[in-house]
Amino acid sequence: MQELSVRHLLGIKDITPQDIQLIFETADNFKDVLNRPIKKVPSLRDITIANVFFENSTRTRLSFELAEKRLSADVINFSSSGSSVKKGETLLDTVNNILAMKVDMIVMRHSSPGAPHFLSKHIPANIVNAGDGTHEHPTQALLDSFSIRERLGEVAGKKVVIIGDILHSRVALSNIFALQKQGAEVMVCGPITLLPKYIQQLGVKVETNVRKALEWCDVANVLRIQLERQQMKYFPSLREYTLYYGIDKKMLDSLNKEIVLMHPGPINRGVELSSDAADSHHSIILNQVENGVAIRMAVLYLLAQRG
Ligand code: CP
Image (cartoon, rainbow, N blue to C red):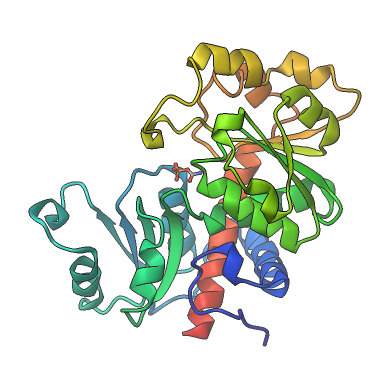
């Protein structure tokens, strides 16, 4: 039986192209299961998983919880708000107390880059990074590539532009690693102030003109402006950002080709995407969300095999 090269999923940087293929093939099988009347399999019966969230989430948290339940795992959910973290308990103490209740796997979101990497050096359980600050969001990148593969047949050779707040985005970094490992060409596009200074050293193309980026690409993955992570003003106003970087359906329809429109959510409607673009036939945004469950089932199942 094939297995992953890692026992934690901390980032796409650490996994191989073969790992990505194995996750996709496993997710294909789980997607078939999810389309059956009975959507549940006993694969993780007797495994207990804690979803430990120190930062807000809708899609990732619900998608992991559903994936765990579809695999018949026992699930507990922890939110830092309302917990003893507010009384000063450390991350390691918090997680060790959860593990003392005989928990096997930890799915963690944290605002500090590297928090799951730190934990992996101190605890015996498998860890899945559900987003660590501005660093990585590996399952998001996997579900994004899986959705491109589903729509376009393959990821290799495709031109993918990631548009928006690249500087503060864990989705951007994980997508760059994932797409390149599968042989796609990657471009980043945004105002110069929201592009990391040495980003081209990752082997990506850099563009500041959104029209040119859309004319180049097969797929546009549009990101949210992360105002909550911005310590200073990176552009004059949201209105001006929308004027130069906002994408609407008229713009998409005016391209002389079909492109695939993606967004990891949550969307700031009327800022980076107009509603008519987000809800248009170009968009696979809800397919991304749907695929998140199968991808997370695959990741949890394969990590549980590693033990
Ligand atoms: N895409 C994503 O991570 O969304 P949530 O923050 O709602 O989990």
